Amino acid sequence: MVVGRGSWAGGVLRALYRRRPVPLPQSIRGRVPDRVRDAHALRAAALAGGLIPPRPMHSETEARTLARLCRGARRVVELGVYEGSSAVMFCRALDRGAELHLIDPFVDESGAALPPGWSSTPTAARLTVSRAAWRGGPRVRWHIARSQDVGRSWTAGPVDLVFIDGDHSLEGCREDWEAWKDHVVPGGAVAFHDARLGRAGGGGGPGPTEVVDGLFRGPRLPEGWMLADEIDTLVVVRRTLRPAGPPAALTT
Ligand SMILES: C[S@@+](CC[C@H](N)C(=O)[O-])C[C@H]1O[C@@H](n2cnc3c(N)ncnc32)[C@H](O)[C@@H]1O
Image (tube, rainbow, N blue to C red; front, side, top):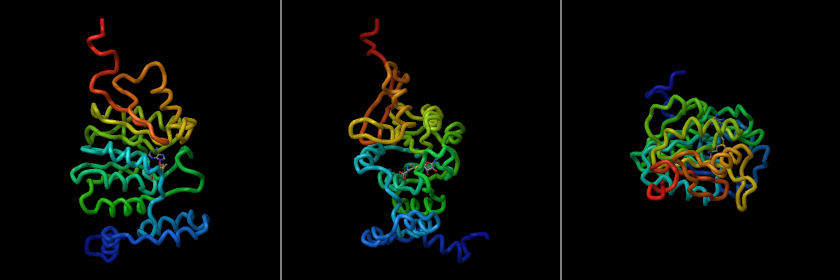
């Protein structure tokens, strides 16, 4: 079926895009049994129609930290979108002229990205994010693909912030770092989610934690990078203007 500008299906899609969502009250949502709440097709339909908000995947403090990193950013990339909760937050935090790239294959290849039985669909996530970006939001670009592949063939320009929250396996997260770090501008940042397992006040998964610990808690930091901030499960690393090392005056 072709969904053209004049077709009724196109009209329905446009109406869904533009409609201000009226989520079901929490008092009703709270009474829905887990097996119904997690039923794939039902959840996707409710999300697409704006009846439920995307499942929150970050804390309030993590959201505030990410929003602060968005200030003045021209291009932000999110690896791993799921239902769009952080993408919606990015839409609210970014300026109108900024670009938000959202990357997710919507397939949990390694099985480490989501709890068993959880999944999302590109259509539901797109509709959710489109509503958030409809007026005054950033320009949103979708990539339904593995973030590592998108990073390796990236030509869209330098990036101010990369939010790594996709494949949570050790290999997948390490590959994301390798594929994306060189696209970050000096002064820009990479934020690893779920990367503080076993740390006080932290949490997350073994994969991202091991990647961050290996890179940023050892004797030698990656050249030109520093650990900038940590909050809850989030670790922010920043690309320095010069390669890391002793100040020039102290160098013999
Ligand atoms: C923890 S969820 C992301 C949560 C999202 N950032 C949020 O705040 O709502 C992980 C997502 O990563 C996606 N994913 C799995 N492998 C991926 C890959 N190789 N590249 C990009 N995303 C991937 C999964 O499909 C899933 O939607």
